[in-house]
Length: 356
Ligand SMILES: Cc1ncc(COP(=O)(O)O)c(C=O)c1O
Image 1 (cartoon, protein in one colour):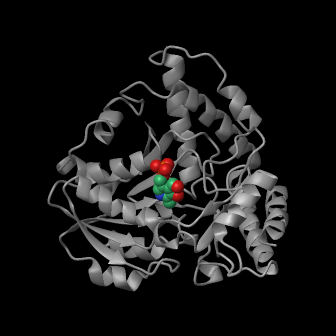
Image 2 (spheres, rainbow, N blue to C red):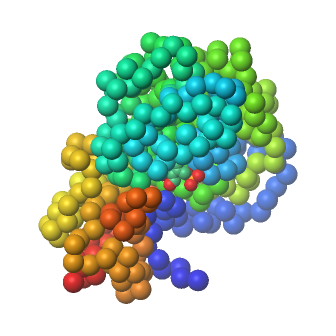
């Protein structure tokens, strides 16, 4: 096993040694007060990261578990859900809706472009129970504006579900101000915790819907979590909770605004460095580029797989390739969590060598 690898992918991200040490603490009985206090406290701290006063739940499971929770708590079989699709992860919502017996009404946007709220307005019919979107589409490196969509959905009876898995804790996400009903995130991205925890906030509007007509779900049932006063009704990931506490200590020591600013700066440095290498950015325009993952077009003269293989074998740096039809066409550099300017500069310098 290689301990020196540089993870420049859109998660999982590099773990701070303090987080690694926190995870070496012994397991203790999780039904004791000290653990429920610790667990509930981390939920309260996550609300600060979410910039919300809504309820927030912590689940054992990767980010997709919260996507599953959001959909399955809010809809029932036969319900229509409007899915705004512009990449691999927004597409996943259509599969989740189908898996729970719902009817996904798919509104497609070209991959690499941002969602168009005008089209959402046209597609939002009164029988739609929920609308799904991804804030930071990691598969294309596009950052979607949430507020223009929430302004439209907010006027309807539908709940707005937003996946912020690869941006929460690194970007400025204002859950209350933007009116997100169900906001999803995961541990292994900007929060720099190992994979295995996910987070879901639930607005009053979403509670009204859920309480009147609960969805069919068991393990990730938010009503059960709320009844248990935000503790996990089932055995919680104790070790990951230690890691989350330490990672949030680190986050608040840095300061949320400062962390958001750092991610913005790292994205700018990455884009300008790539352009200096003669590469082009994949998203249609600079103003829709993600602050946590940069997608760029593979050069014509060398296969992207060769480039990534060289980066790994010669320099021990891992960057990501494209997904679905973008496989072989684009590459992606993740710059989230504990990522520093030095990591970007090193990656770009090694990328320059690998391109030759
Ligand atoms: C935007 C987005 N949504 C969903 C997921 C899926 O999360 P997980 O792999 O943690 O289940 C990812 C993971 O890369 C992601 O970037």
